[in-house]
Image (cartoon, rainbow, N blue to C red; front, side, top):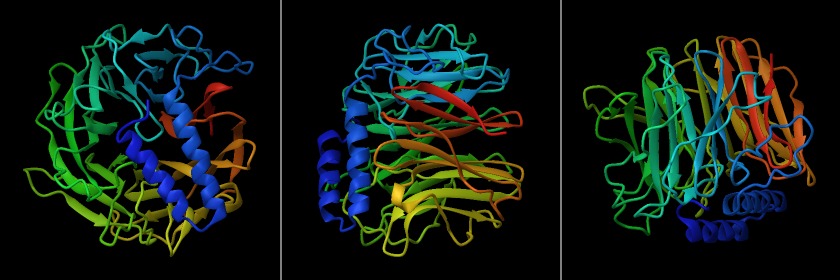
Length: 417
């Protein structure tokens, strides 16, 4: 179940590995390429779950590795679980210790396309409506579908493509987000504008979804030249307007990051570059960034192997993302820190990422209580010797959690407070 562009992505990554000079980063890429192929091409078998871990035995095919979670307004934790041909939703009322009987989203069998970057999404609005997105094969190799439950998760609407051009062009790597007013946004990579396949880079489109009527308006284009294989990050500013962070392909083949802000009244979206690591590479890093906004502060985290900077980094901005602090390196570079996430709640900031020591993957967190000015020491909060998904931070009222899924241990929701 490797997502688009399947063979091309693998060839690019192999060429990427051959071009690298640093042995440590070659090891990193090989490790995560193996995870991508094994995790995406086969469903996960949870026959040997650790004691106390989330049990997937009630899923027909055992449940997939790449799950996504979100809290609802009633405090329940909702989870979307992909398998090879089906997508399910369940919920937990005890912070991930046990889950309800899963509800099938797609009653018609599909070839589900999923990976760490091309993952399913789930969100719950203030009315309790549950929105899901996922990628599957259709007339094109990959299409993002959406579905909505208006009856508290008992059933879901027939999945429909997000893109009106789905029969003609691939859409993938969707990002679902809900602002504090309950408006549901969805962003995705779209290939409808690609005419010269020798040039790398995709467009990003977006729309909003209504729980009663479906899509609110035709998809609108935000930007071009996004890195093909890196997922989009999204947050909302003080006016409840979305702000995207994405890896772009800048002139000269440089793959650094920029911010995008949609504008009202059909005005041209705002777009500007925010990282300047000078990573020149003719391949896809498969490594999306993270963004959070709180109290007018922007917080970003990202991975790079540029000539000016290598590794995992965090920075913040006090002027709405126009300028950022000196990047702070995260993790132990000898253990290949990767795949960060960041969350902000007033002056409390939390970061999470994973590291690999050659044997096991460790889940690390680091917190600040003063808006990112100073930080407590990072610490390991979980580990696994098997395949792992990326970690993600989420909030339920004032509590912050890390959502993490691993092959052997199953799903874990780990409180940070």
